[in-house]
Length: 107
Image 1 (cartoon, helix red, strand yellow):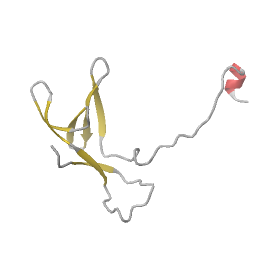
Image 2: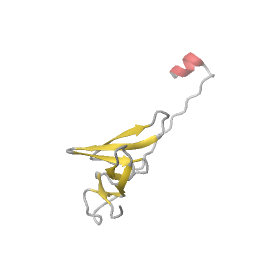
Image 3: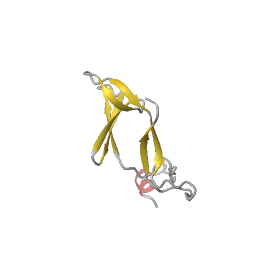
Image 4: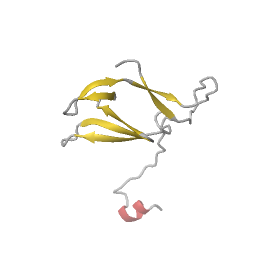
């Protein structure tokens, strides 16, 4: 007998589901993101903390290269993500190697 049946009888139901997370979106990362919001909970952007550096991102996910005096983005760059191992021919799925982000060509 489950605790919820003992305490609540049939007024509460319980169902157990196993949650699946695609390994491509839950890979180990070499960074930690700290998000910034306005007072009314609108996303402003985030700061990506890595060993030895910090990178600012705007709310669209672009890396900020230059800001004005008010903190508004003047120049930014697209970023991409790739596996650290680099050998795509030897990779098998699911992939458990960490991700790294790399600057894109577009500014």
